Length: 158
Image (cartoon, rainbow, N blue to C red; front, side):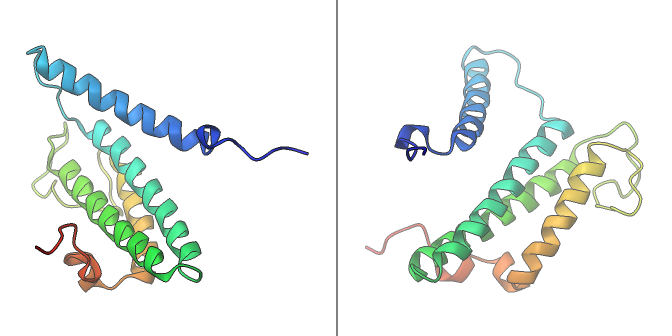
């Protein structure tokens, strides 16, 4: 029989992913403080970040579904976080297409999953975004995705 994990041992993979992202953010901040040349944002960097956002979106979606029946208010807040993560993933996907490529065509800023001349990472980010988008659209309206979700705000009334 196994004992339940201690709180500091719970969810080790989430902790490792968070530690990796924190390490990356710190490394960028230290380079900036040391007056080193700014890190170049490239398409591969945004592809990896998009992958993190879409997986975190899926996790929050599952947690929101699980929380709704016993704790409806918590479920709504998790659903709001889920929508905002999708908005962030969409913005990263859009930024990805605005970065230069070796094979930039006239309409290179647009996503064309049916014809991907640049190969990876365009292949991965566009297909991932398209697949995630189908799941999002089954649960969310276009209006929800465009504005602040469900009237929740992050500021408090005075």
